[in-house]
Length: 112
Image (tube, rainbow, N blue to C red; front, side):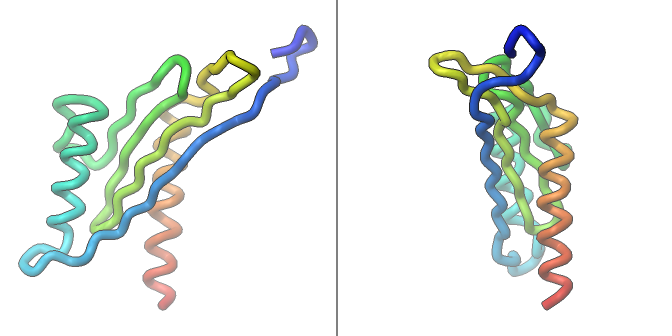
């Protein structure tokens, strides 16, 4: 941040939206299994929920959310200014971004 309060640096973030093929007996089984593995890696013991997030000081939050066969993993944003990096978000915003992505994915499928 500059002395006059302007934020400097380049904001960086990534989102990954994965749609799994439907399972034979349970359409959501593959996505559910993948979410449990990702959630356990992000925040151990939270694999039974449908969304999980952890805040990271330097690289911003990392979160995973699942609805049906869709899984979204979001990381950041964070700001890079030269060699300095700092989080530019919080879990609430990260989870909202993931939910927006999941919502758009469902509207696209329904609109086919």
